[in-house]
Length: 121
Image 1 (cartoon, rainbow, N blue to C red):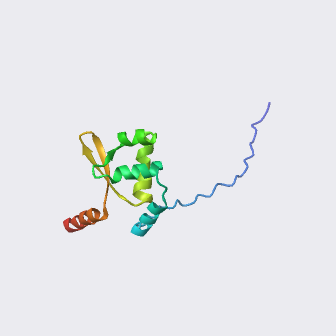
Image 2: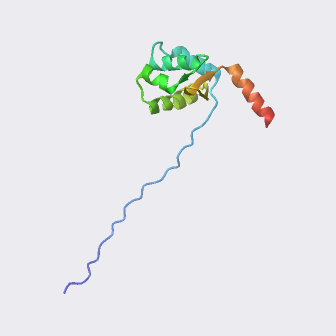
Image 3: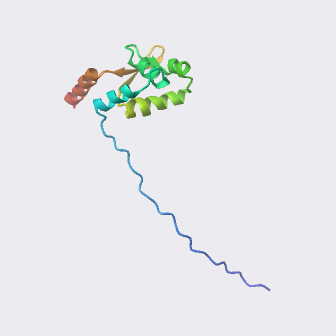
């Protein structure tokens, strides 16, 4: 007869959990945006998309996809990550007849809207 075998447990060091950093949502200055645009090369896909967004009529994701060769989810990521966060543009979207239309509003319109929001609150 054999008795129960005892297993030796080896104490393994547990990985140290580190606190995740929260992204700092610092407002981007107008100088930083203009310097970022000044450094941008012309004729790039980024420049094309920004030019399409700065058009008064705006543009749709469906129009950006063939112009850049990107997939739809890549265009949405570019709009959120680069246009809004990195470049700090005031990107607005509105439901239009041909789908959702994205535009970059100029600073005067953005300030006026911010003033209306603060007055309403």
